[in-house]
Length: 106
Image (tube, rainbow, N blue to C red; front, side, top):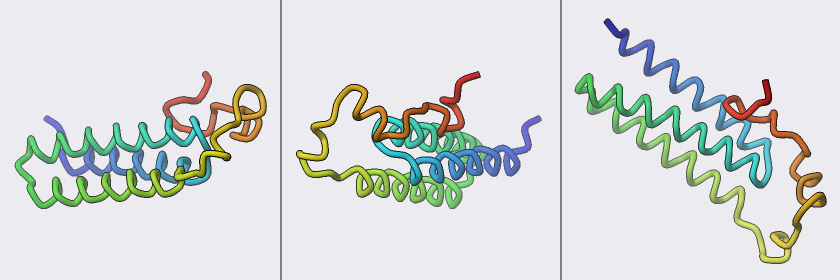
């Protein structure tokens, strides 16, 4: 039997960790972190829906929207800032993939 509250809390915590990493990251790394946060919140939403907890579903959907909005604000750049490619872009983005929980090298 699944402990619904614990599972929702676990996925929500993971989403918040990914969100924190997203806020510190740039470019593609931030996108990976955003995707992680969305993935974890969607799992929590699925569990809340299955348990019939409509209030929790609404809260989680709101949080997902807030995180997506924060990502879009963070990554709203002028065209001149989007011209970096290759090594220069990689270096500007921190040069490491290990910033996000699900995308770290093992």
